[in-house]
Image (tube, one colour):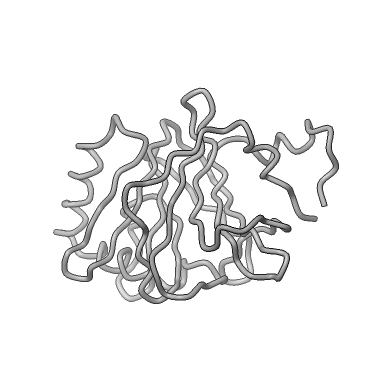
Length: 190
């Protein structure tokens, strides 16, 4: 089954991050920053679906000042099909216990296995805690991470939106109750 999140997000306010997310290898990770992954093993937590290396816009979707979701826009084309994002053959769901979710490349999360980089990130997140998002730059690798301040903990599922041609249009993490709202919608989903 696929869902139509676009209808659910039609009334959402969209805030685009000031900086585009850098994906040098096209491999994306969604996780609570800093990730706390073992050094050399970050790639195991990347989305199975990959995109061309490049820089991509990140949008934070809110309603009444509550973060509903965040997405990495790969192609500014309409989504014709939403499917659960995958990681090693399983649906991509990640836990948050510090009220912050995020998107980054495998490379930036690998850099955050270093204690000094992790401390720098935590300081950056604390400084911007009143903003909807923070941007962390790892100078040595030229990568960055977009952290979304949620105000709540939980387990969050990610989705991939595909174009009519079957290409990845975007990645979306549901930080609200989008999936639960599907049953409330008067429109059937395809």
